[in-house]
Amino acid sequence: MPEITNEASSKAVAKLDPMKVTIVGGGHIGTALCCYIKHTYPEYEVRMFTRRPERFASLITCNDWEGECSYQVELNCVSNDASLAAKDADIVFIALPHFAVEKAFADIAPFVAEGSFVGVLPGSGGFEFFFDKYFKGKAKLFGFQRVPFTAKLAEYGKEVNLKSWKPCSVVGTLHAADLDEACARIEACGLKTKRADNFLAVSLTPSNPVLHTSRTYEIFGDKPRDYEFSEHLHFYVGWGNKASETLFAVDGELHALFDAMPELDMSSVKPLGEHYESPTIEAMTAKINSIQTFQTVMAPMKPAPAATSAPASAANASEGKFVADTSSRLFTEDFPWGLAIIRAYCEIFGTPAPTIDKVLGWYASYMGLEYYVDGKFCGKDLAKTGIPQNHGITTREQVIELFSK
Image (cartoon, rainbow, N blue to C red; front, side, top):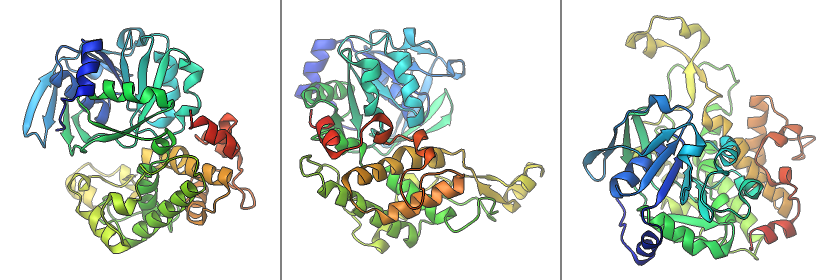
């Protein structure tokens, strides 16, 4: 659990005490964050905005694995009514799939406090392009490079396991003048921060958009969509050198993109070999397989149609066949709202991206989408992704101006 006492957070608490905190999203991260903040600062008003409030118990249990303790909290509000859950919020943390972020913006914008801070965890997905459409002049945007911890629901709305704290979270704001206050408010919620020089260093961090897509490509990339696997594979356990090779290649193309934008300081975005302390393909493969919090994560698969009607027993489950579950966020989020955005910036800055093209081209074909036409990154289905071109940003000058504020 991170240190929660420092000068910045003390000032913020004194200014806003008691803080009104809204978490949007009742999934793994959202539930754990609600519990942690309410437990740490019981005087705060902590509310959750969720589509399914009826599934939440009055007392939510949080098992803090690293702190070796469990506690229960009662939130001030759990509601699907934004006028209740977001009313006068001083800070909002959004923990949703990125395709759902814009609707959340629209829902909460009328109700947050003037001068509030609204952030998304993690901060990739392109939501900076439409933030001002809903909050201009009223609220300020922040984002995290990565989530501050990992978490797993034991039972939706009732119990969550909080795991693996990061020492601190790298935070960026769309406007540099807002960064100190954003970090002060985040730290006032018990989360330690480091500052990114600009928001692009948050939105282009090679976390899930590179990590997840590399492994998804390894598992499914050489198989037809209806291929039946003999077992339900783990996602990280069994990670192979092919995934590591793809990861290093995509990460290299991303950092070549950074080299093409010297006007922006991207130094807070560490190469993945450095982040995971694994400089070679073989070392990366061993590292990913060894990370404890990754051990139970399963690949995006579901029972094959022929196995669906089989009797539900452990024996039948182990003997069944499995196919890709393309409704998983590993398919619906990390490619269109992650890797496609990286590729779009390569298009704008004119940097080559052969590995990204290979992986993204495979994904488009696998999903029956058009991302490329005659080898050019201009397919009609890019309109359904988070790329900057969908928001009128097509030149390097526009990018530099947006992220130099």
